[in-house]
Every structure is written in C-alpha cells, then in structure tokens.
Amino acid sequence: MNVAAFEFLKPSDAQIDDMDVCRKAAHAYAEVIEDMVPEGPDKTYLLRKLREVAMWVNVAITRHADGTPRVDQADEPPGVDTFERGKAAMASSISNALGKDTDAGS
Image (cartoon, rainbow, N blue to C red; front, side, top):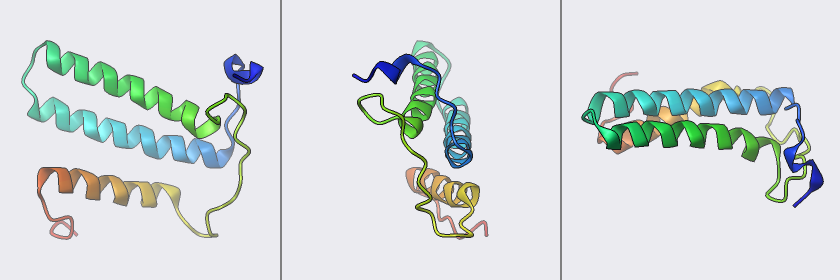
C-alpha cells in the first residue's frame, strides 16, 4: 500500500464532477429504496451500505488500488458534459431495473 493512501488528496475538477454524478446516482437509488422497501432493519442496512458505497466511490475516483493518487487525465472528448452523461446512464439503469422504458418520459 502506498504511504499516501491515508493522506488528504484534493480531487481535480474533473474528478469532482465524476464524484457529483456518482453521489446523485446514489441519492436517486436511495430514493428508490426508500419508496419500495418496507421499513425495518433490512432497509436500514441497505441505506447504510449505500452511503458507504457512495463514500468509497470518491476513493476509487481519486486513487489507484494501491493508494497512489490517480493523475487527472483529460480522456473525455471536449464538450462532453459529465453530469448529463451520468444522469442518462443513471436513468437508464434505474428504468431497466424497474422494467420501464426510458424513452417514454422524454
């Protein structure tokens, strides 16, 4: 493990955008769980684990598996809106999971 694994690592602007998309996707999924899962310890567990996953996403975006910082590389083509890309992927995933057509609401 890299010694920097426990040090603060300021994310780049691109990484912050990716984190925002993932956080919003986790929030949307939490709302689905809130609406569809009955109250009880299992629901509490699901929401706690989802929060944990949402936090680990930030680590995965900013670091390699050995803890070394991930260097921001502009591998997105110019003009790609990270939020719109993530929002479309999230909507498609949730709709597919619920068996709904994503084009119906467009």
